[in-house]
Amino acid sequence: MVKSSSFHKEIEPVKKNKHPLTALSQKGPLLFLLDYDGTLTDFKKNPEHSQISASTRALLRWLQQKHKAVIVTGRYVNSLFKISRLKKFPIIGSHGFEARNLPKGLRFASLAQEKLYRKEAAILWKAVRHLHHRFPGIYIEKKPFSSTIHFRGIVFSKKQTTQLHQEFNAIYRRTITPRFWNLEQGKKMIEVLPKGFSKGKSVKALLKRFPHHQVIYAGDDVADISVFKVLGKKGLKIAVGNRVPRKYYDLKFKNPREFLTWLKVFETSQKKWLPCISNY
Image 1 (tube, one colour):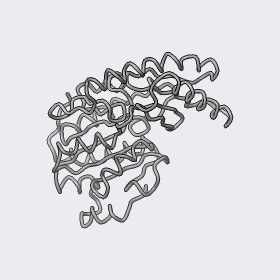
Image 2: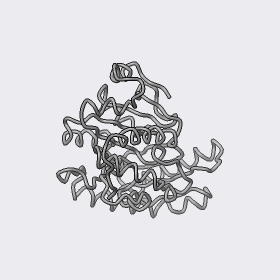
Image 3: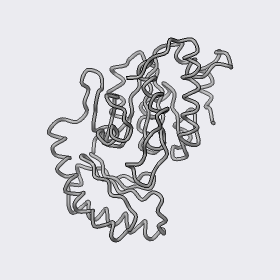
Image 4: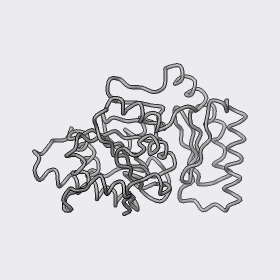
């Protein structure tokens, strides 16, 4: 685990035997903003299998009730609810396009934008479906406001990977309106996202509803960098895995298991002297 000098300064002079988040909570209320895939659970070949454990679910509900917590994910909201079983949990979905259960009815996309992107995403999904015949093993995820191809757990040669990217790009450019979209490459995935939206922009809008909270953000991929940039020197920035460049984070964990263990230590330390809070 790596700590930046700036974070060292923030937790001093708190006693060494106290958890860093306990140190932050003594200065004001906490707001946990957490990515899902690669942060709270390991990646799976099929994204629909990326479920969290009952203990992780209980931890998230505790964070939400004792402090405040929001999941910030690239997944569309209904998919996240289905696999996580976190009903009524605050969610920023589709890389900042969707909003659900956020304070004061906060939303990011207009109804007209939702209609436009839903229509184009459906057209693109139909156009790329045949690619699984040419590239066996890929998973083409059907989303309401974007389109994603996953090839986790598949061994492609460099040539095959390049071909997949080229063919997807060609289909994307001839079937929908490129000026409305961003073409992104993530961890073993290719994705087109609504232009003008990002995790960072949505978090910036959300933070206006929490002006006095100290923010803890955890993410694992390049899509999370936009949030790290928004936070700047404020809050605690956590990277999980090796995709985020060193200059953007304060703490780093090797994998979701290590991060969740660290988070559960905080929960345990708080429950030693706080009344137990029941789940939803």
